[in-house]
Amino acid sequence: MNVARIDWIIIGVFFVTLLGLAIYINTLCRSVADYLVSARKVRMWLGIGAGIAGEIGLVSIAGMCEQGYRRGYAFTLLQIFSIAIMVPLFGIWGFGIQRFRASKAMSVPQYIEMRYSKRLRIITGFTNCLAGVIQMSIFPIIGARFLAVLMKLPETISIAGIPMQSVLLIMGLLLICNIVFTYLGGSITMTVTNFFMMIVIMGAICWLMMHLISQSGLQAYWTNLEKNLGKAAFYPFTGTDGNYGILFFLWSTLMGILLQFSYGPYLQKYASMDKPKTVSRSYFLGAMFVSGRLFLVMGFGVATLASLGTTVPADFHLAAADWGQMSTAYYLARHTPPVLMGFWLSCLLFADISSTDQYLLSWSTSIVNDCIMPFRKKPFEQKAHIRAIRLTIVAMCAFFFLVGMIYKPTMPIWEFLWLIANIIGGTGIAVLFGMYWKRANTAGAYAAIACNLVIPLADQIARYIYSVKRPSMTYPLAPQQTGFWAYIIGMLLLVIVSLLTKSEHKYWDLGKAVREMNDAEQTDSSRNPSSTGGIQ
Amino acid sequence: MIQFSTDPNIGPWSKFVFWFAMINTIATMAFTLVVIFFGFFDLKFLFKALREERIDVTDDGRVSESDTLQK
Image (cartoon, rainbow over the protein chains, first blue to last red):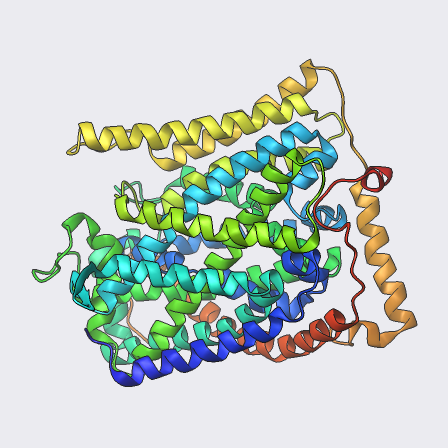
C-alpha cells in the first residue's frame, strides 16, 4: 500500500470535521421540506458551490480520466458547442427550469401528477427510480476499484484473520460513509457539507494537476499527447475508431437539455433554491465554468497517456480490458507524493460522498414519495416520512453492494451512465412538452416514457448477451445511436399520440407563476434589503 | 510558451485547444475562489432562515386541492 501515515491523518481530520458539522446541522432539520429541499432557502453562491461538489463524483472522475486517456481533449469542441446552446437556453432564458421551480414540485413525478395523472406519476416514479438505481449501482464498485489501484492495495486483505477482497472492503466503507452523511439532515446537511467538500475537492484537483505538470513539463505533456493520438486528441469528428462523432454530440446535447427537466438530482437542487431566477443564474455561472473542471480532471488521463502511452504495463494486475478505466489510477499511484496523496484521497472520498449522497437522497425521495405514498390512504407523519426515506437509502446501499459483487463492465463508464440516463430523459420529454404545449396529454406522455424505457433497456440486455455469446466481436450499435433515436422516436410519439387522442390536459401557465415569484421577491427586497442579504 | 506540432493537420487544432483549456482552467480556479467567498454569506443566510422558519406539515410532496387551484 502506498498511503503514508500522514495521508491517513489528513483524511481523518477532514472526515471527522465534516462529520461533526453534519451532526450539528442535523439538529436544524425539523420538517420534510427541510430534509428534502433545504426548506427552499438555498441561495445562488451556496447552490453553485454545493453543486460543484455534487457534480464531481468519484465515478465521474474515473470516467473523465478514462475519456482523457482514450480521447485526449477531443471533448473540447463538443463542450464549446454545448455551452453555446445550453448557456443561453437555461442560464439566460431559464427555459423550463424556472418553470419547474415555479411549480413548487419537489420532484419530477410530483409535477407529472400535477400536469398529467396520478397513475403516470407512479409509473414515472418507478421508471426513473429504476434507471437511477441501475445507473448508481456501478458508482461504488467503480469508485472502489479506482481507489484500490490508486492505493496499490493487494487483492485480498486480512482483517482479524479473515481474508477479504480489498475492493469489496473499500466499497463497503464508501457506502457506509454515504449512508452516514445522507442519514444526517438530508438536503440541508448535503448542501452545507458539499460546499465544504467542494473546497477540498477543487483544492486537491488543482494541486495535483500542477504537480503532474511540474513533474513532466508542459511541453512534454502536450507533445506526447499530439504524438499518441494525433488530430483525434483535439478534433472529435475525425471518423476514426473510438472518436466521438456528430451523432454523439447530438445525443449528448439533446440528453443535456432533457435531463434538465427530468433528472431527479438536478431538479431537487432547483427545487431547493429560493426563487426561479436563482435557478437560471446559478445554472449560468455553473455552466460557464464547468469546462475548466473538465479539463483539470481529464488532464489526469491525458498526463497518463503522455507518460505511459497506450501499452498496458506488465505489472498491471487486472484484466487488459480494464486498463482504459484504471490507467489513471495506476499512473497516479506512482506519481503522487505523501501529503498530496492524503489530499487527493480526501478529494476522492468527498467526491464520492457529495455526489452519491445527492443521488441517494433524490432517488430515495422519489421511491417514497412517488412509489409508496400514492398507495397509502393516510399520509406519513413528518418523522415517519423521513424514517421511510432513510430506510430506503440503507436498502439501496445494500443493493449497490450486491451489484458491485457481480459487476462486469461492457462499455466505457461515461457511455453506460448516459445510456441509462436515456430512460430518465423520456420523462424529460413529457415534462418539457407539458410545460410549453397545451395539447400534450397523458396518452402522449405514456408513449414517450415507454419508448425511452424499452429501447435503452433492450440495448443493455442485448449488449450483455452479445458480450457473452460473441466475446471477440464488437456490439454493432454505438450507445449514441440507440440513445439519440430513442429520444427522437419518443418526441414524435408524444406529439402524434397527443394529437390523435382525446385532449384531457391539466395545463396551467407556469410562465405567469415564474414572473409572479420573481416579482414578489423583488418587491420584498425593495421593502426590506436585509431579506436578501444584499449579496445577489 | 510551448511548441505545437508543425503538422498542418494537427498544429492549429492543438494550439486552439491548448489555449481554450488553459484560459478556462485559470478562469475556473478564480471563479472557485469567488464561489467560496460569497458562499459563506449564503451559508449564514441559510442558518438564519432555518432557525426562523415556520414549518408547513403539508409541504411533503403530496399534490393537494390547493395545488390544482393554481391552474
